[in-house]
Image 1 (tube, helix red, strand yellow):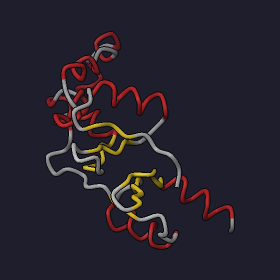
Image 2 (spheres, rainbow, N blue to C red):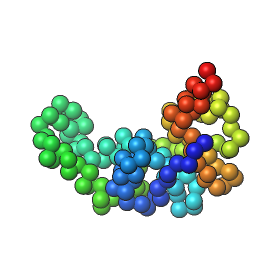
Image 3 (cartoon, rainbow, N blue to C red):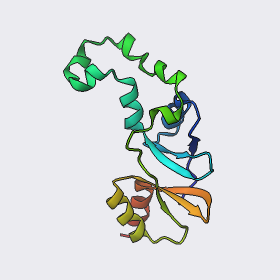
Image 4 (cartoon, helix red, strand yellow):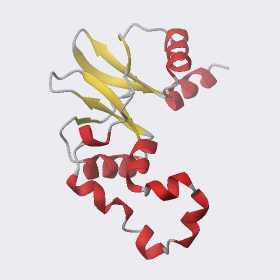
Length: 142
């Protein structure tokens, strides 16, 4: 487990994107108003919010957008909250307690298709386990 940043569900979506960019995160854990992990916001979901739908439908059209316009794609996040950009089929956070074994964590990641697991001690969020962190640990003893 390692300390892992979170965002509040009512945080600004642009701030969440900046956090992911600055800390090189694949996603963040979104905390609900009750202080518990609510969902996972993958970076790919934020990208879906900034890429126009017509380009998502036909990625070949991306070639016609000049870099000047592409550089401004994230501007639309400034007026949105994290809750507005969560997937409709929200990605529920995988949660383990501090005693979880590496096999339990790996199995949960495989089952839920998530590279990010929140660690709760009772009702208190204390950090997360990432797939890369789990691999580092597993490969260190191999």
